[in-house]
Image 1 (cartoon, rainbow, N blue to C red):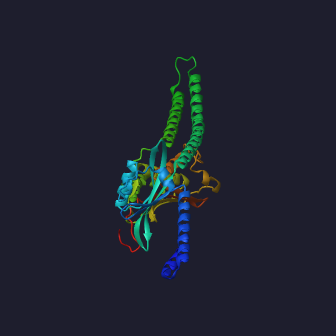
Image 2 (cartoon, helix red, strand yellow):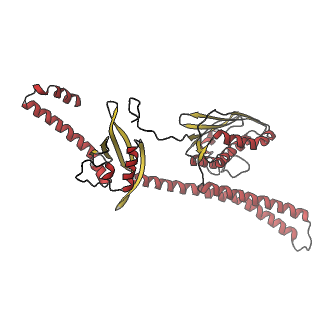
Image 3 (cartoon, rainbow, N blue to C red):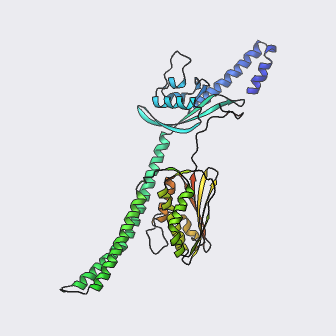
Length: 388
């Protein structure tokens, strides 16, 4: 349609009254169609010029955002928006020429609503001529996500509670049996042999320690983490942990290999939690290599992430267990709570990262932890490569 109008305008001087009338009808129909499309959208759309004055907006934008127009045609968009927080946001981001994606605000206009705001450049012929603002009402979406999270948390809590009950049952049973043995040994005697009593008490103390570990790990798994994320060098954090573990690795007859990428960007992590996660992975690797082996730690960069690999050449994980290893209380060990990898998963997710695993029985296992590289906000750049 645009090409048709351009060609018609080139021949405008040669057109008669009827042809000009038909051209105007075509233009009117085109504008009416665009207006219908815009006003039928559930998302809000607004267009401004380079002076931040509103050129166009649809009905959804007007429904979501309170607007107060005055006779002054030179008013900026932030002057006519009723919500002060949103107005200040537009003033700051538009004047700084920042590109914004999905910034959320809670608006109160009788009923609280959550809107997601994006700001993009309005580009024509490789130059920016204004701004395109997109606003989506995500209230229902957020509500569904919250309900889903609550359902998932309830399911996870049910699994954890069942696991705790199962784990606690065994040591409690053992404690009960040994208390009965102590009672039987004492009987109505005025004096008893202390050696057998000491053995029973030793077992009871061991089981109490086991109960304590179960409770501590359970609380760690269910409580929110008090993480303090700061820019850190992941290589330095790993080296500190490996220095702490070097004697344990030597005792286990495990050869350590490292490959740390140079000049990795600093990432936002809490060193104590990252060390905790890596320690659990390394402990698992040692368990998988009872007769010694090779442990390899690698770091590197892949696109917008920094990765850490923990690789062993141990017994590996059966294929049918791969999907279960991060589940609470799933373990193939004769000891432990079965929460180790669950805690690793939780720590990585708290750092906005991802964890994956590859394993083959008899060959070994490779865990990969990916952490996002902090992205600086970029100024809008026109297509000629010049800052605007």
